[in-house]
Length: 276
Image 1: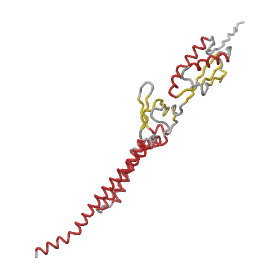
Image 2 (image 1 turned 90 degrees about the vertical axis):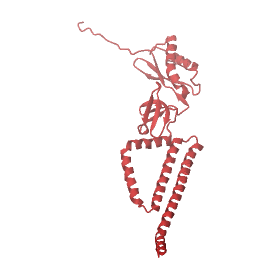
Image 3 (image 1 turned 135 degrees about the vertical axis):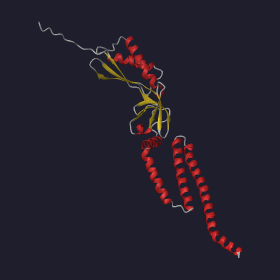
Image 4 (image 1 turned 135 degrees about the horizontal axis):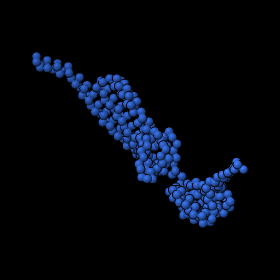
């Protein structure tokens, strides 16, 4: 009699035990397969950047992480479903939590969105000289949240990407050849052809000024006290600042040697003798 009752108890709980065992095995299988797929997707997305050096690997690592965690989230929901957990309420709770976190971190998320756009469109890259967000310097690092510049006096400037993306960006290193705009004035009583010849000679002797395209030297403005020349020599980008800060002194010395006056503002004062 006791053996019969024991067999009845076993038969009563056996289906439930088998169901739980089946669910556990299926959950483990889903988890293992999900982890494997998430890892493969991440590596596959990162490999795209590795195969194409012109693409930014930081951006593809970010996309790979987003894809991996999205897959893992669905895997977690599928595992919970195997045990009869109602996932609709969990999804709603996660959605509400995500909204709250998004509102709390909206500044950070705007930097993230701007960083993604900068890494996709690449208006500048590391080692470029840029004007961005009112700052000028060499780009040393670009990530998803900030851009780091190094100034000429060796300061490090960290700029949030959201301040850069919505403003004007001037990339001084985009083109290999650059023009250097400068203005020089000579007195009205000087011969403009002679002044132009002096300037042309200085530019021709400078080792970093290109012959092609040829320097541009022309009268641009007739000011109150001077005749102004616009001078635009061309050079490779890495020599821009050498020319910008060496040519003005050389032209000043050359004009002095040629006895060509560089004027300063003059003002005529007329004195009226009212008693006369």
